[in-house]
Length: 149
Image (cartoon, rainbow, N blue to C red):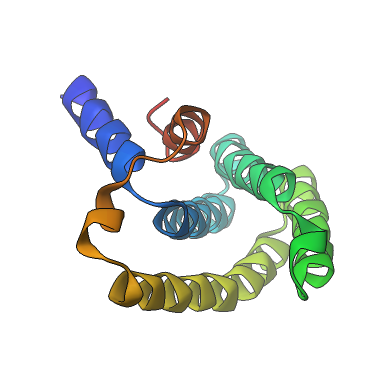
């Protein structure tokens, strides 16, 4: 069953545009942080660390793919990513559920904003543009970060 799910998610990642891939990564990051908080609250620090480290990997990938000079808010978003990464590392290292929850509170409005932007792009895009494959490396990285690679 895992291989079927993996193929499905990989196929989905390969056929979405960059905006949808970004929203999928934000959704997965929120899920990882939620799972990390829950694990910390139940005393499962090893499990929490696994989830929070995966969230850190997503933030690191977002940082690498961001071109801060490419748009007006790029530097500010990079600063948020740096702060978020440091806080996720701290929450994981210290087993701090409140700190992880604060990370979630920071990510949620960003995720909502990217979802709104992606929805707007989808409405404005031609139907053929909705299924254009993303670059193979983006698809592979996206699949891995979404938990199937």
